[in-house]
Image 1 (cartoon, rainbow, N blue to C red):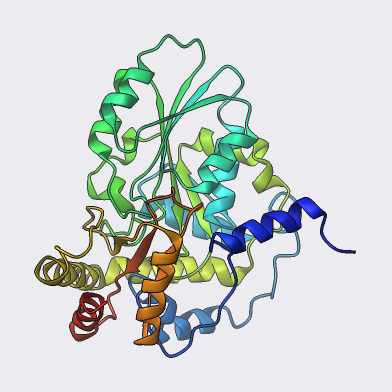
Image 2 (spheres, rainbow, N blue to C red):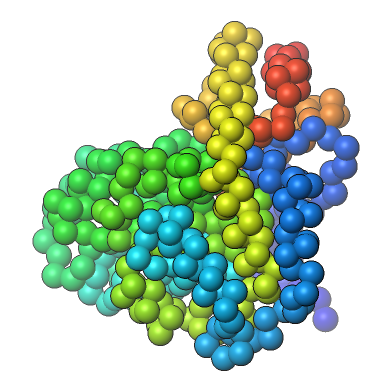
Length: 374
């Protein structure tokens, strides 16, 4: 039985406007696309250590944490992460997407209001949609717009939801000022540290650790599948917050727990980051090299969003233009992917260039030179 006609028509429209997604295998290209900023997903030393530690572990957990899936390894990993992130307690989740769904669908209640940045990740918006609280977005990184909306009379609780680093632009939220606003208006601040975890802070605790704001943030959400290079996620906060999620967060209650291998991977990787901060320095040195080259060779040809993060963008309005430029780079051996509408707004299509600790300066220079010849 085929898809309903309306779904076939949707696929046809995607193909017609050059926005149809498909899965691809890309081999032997220079990686300027993955979120493996620190190169830990490909680190042979780490892989061997994780393998040795997990050698005698079960293949899977066998059930949800509330049934048969819990074990001492989970408890140990969460205690370790609480110490790393300077939190009272943490709770592991299967992914950052699951963690955002859990927090935002269960914590804000009917009568509450959620104020979220308009460029928030899809998992944030989906989590909000699943809950019962009312919601309104504020202009991206616009504290004036946020305060105007915070100052309105509201009988229920107020929640501010932001990303510390935004996934499409690589720009940074003004976390210090957001904390001040949350305290001024007695609002609960929820920070998704997905693209900052591992990259910032001695222990990889993101911007909240870098700026020493851990105790002023209601809820922090960490993803281990980006800079840490493994899998899973964690929510960090008070003991009461974690206890509430265990009791009321459906994405936690009704899913099979992570396997032991994931817990060991998280522990091993986060310890490695704390002991090897030089890899953080290496990736930011590459970012600075790219920015110097862009300024010298591409400034008059392309526009970019302002970012000092490994996520760098080149704005290429129109899906056709974005695809064409990406294909030009792929043909020259560079794995750089286009980000197309509707993932971003029409007119804001872009190339999303991700820099890594393992990219050489020659590779970065060659990428810029290739862009300059388009």
